[in-house]
Image 1 (cartoon, one colour):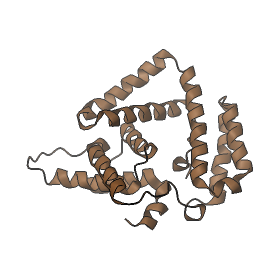
Image 2: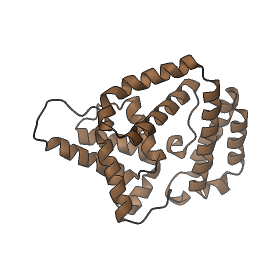
Image 3: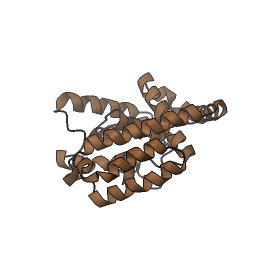
Image 4: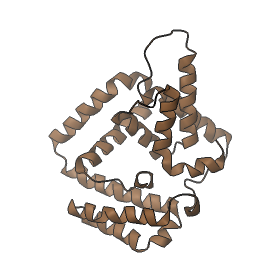
Length: 228
């Protein structure tokens, strides 16, 4: 994948990985699990380039299809590709210059559509008691042209607002709710633990619990990866 195509797909990170995994698996009917989505978000949060994720998926399936011991069982989780993605990311980092974290405004997201999406989050956050976060988003919307000119900085600001939402939500979460979330995590994670390193498990656990918390709150995400 060329530099230009990687940048052009930067904010389609989740969709690109989902579709590539489906093609590599050989079926468009497969739906990724909550754990799979948490894994993709973990890659995004730790800076795994899209190119490395796609290359790692290809490498994992190539190894799967050339294995000596044949079984009828298909690859049913993106976690099967986790080690190959980590290796591809390391190789990419070691063998080519570091890229900018985000494309320019002209290369990526349409101004008005993004502004409209952000503005729609303001009453939603306020209605759920996240008043300071709603005010922070409104401040971005009010000076949107300046923010849109630097998407990398805009993504940092939106991610910081998301972290403030999560911090407030965690503080309000009951022990019973947290225990339920961890039980769900363990059920999802148990079949895949042996394929994941300690660092990958830690990343995945945090991502899974954060995604579940957002879902329970009924609050839509603010990161540019989720807006469009």
